[in-house]
Image 1: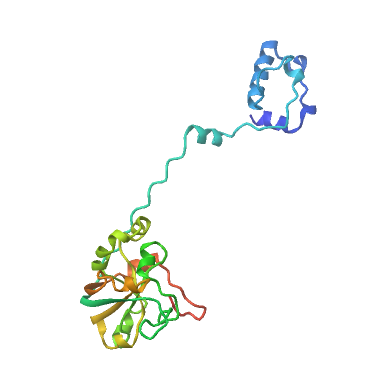
Image 2 (image 1 turned 60 degrees about the vertical axis):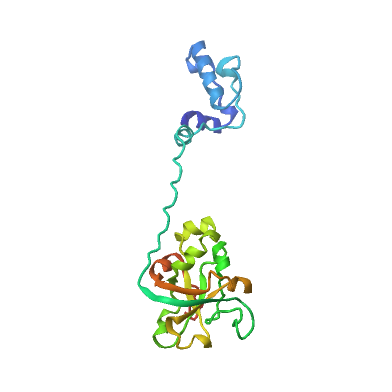
Length: 239
């Protein structure tokens, strides 16, 4: 095959073989002619043996790799294993949850989180349009250690499970990453007694599924492997 392909690349002027010079019988010439016709994808056999061989632009035969791939198609890519986010330490046995939404007023606090980054809503996360859900929590004293970390709220995961897009469920194992990136005056010294969940609209924030007391768990280690933070040039984590 390499010989034929190399000869073809020299052009038709170099391929003028006669039966005498080739020292082949007529039947051998016919067989070789047929083989060349097949290699160069020319329909039918031509008369006159090799002496009339005048191939078109060279077309090299397929490589062994090409033939192998045609005969043995590659195995299908196995599905990615489903992610599993483990619940860590229980941080609260009963935190009172309420909702808020992006709005530029004193009550809602504007369109940015406490670190000047974007607010990510629960509705956008469930639709696959946000990397996590922003929550607001007390920042005073030791509570500041929980800021910029992920928590899990199993009660909300169960309540909103039917609203979660399938691709999001597979990516996060059905969990919802809530990240403490916001706060406000009404959270001061409330510790784990109060937390706000960021929603898309006012009606979403008042959804009964959000209201009430829920258990809170640490999920920071597993979620940080999936969701890299956004850090400014000054080294400040803002999202």
